Length: 148
Image (cartoon, rainbow, N blue to C red; front, side, top):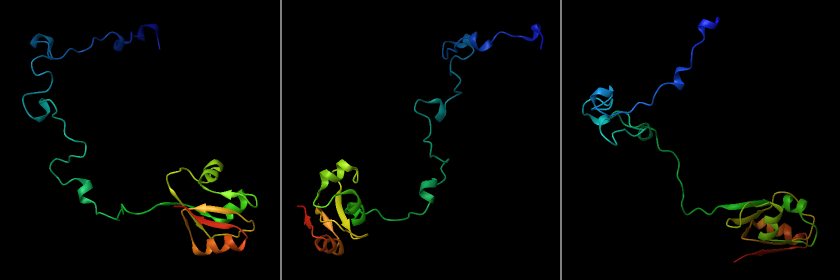
């Protein structure tokens, strides 16, 4: 590479193109949009999913599954987690679970399941219990109270 091969950066020196400023400007009259037609008009862009009149991909794919709008979603907790995180005689409710980080939000309902062993007497307050979980809590000397 020689000194004579160096060039000034042309991108810095080119002027901004001003469309529609008369025929003498080189890009006047139709402003580079051609004559008439959909793309010449304002708002003439087609939607990204438009496939030229062919049926859209979203419509061609099979519809799968079902979304039940009446389904009740619970934050699920197992007894083994409560056994690890709480001391004997502790009150386990929504506020304490949220403070420890076992549940993410106050809005969801809480359900206690019987997975694992419970060796501590806990006073558990939740929205729902499995039958076995309630049995295990009372067998360990605690209380299983349903809210609402």
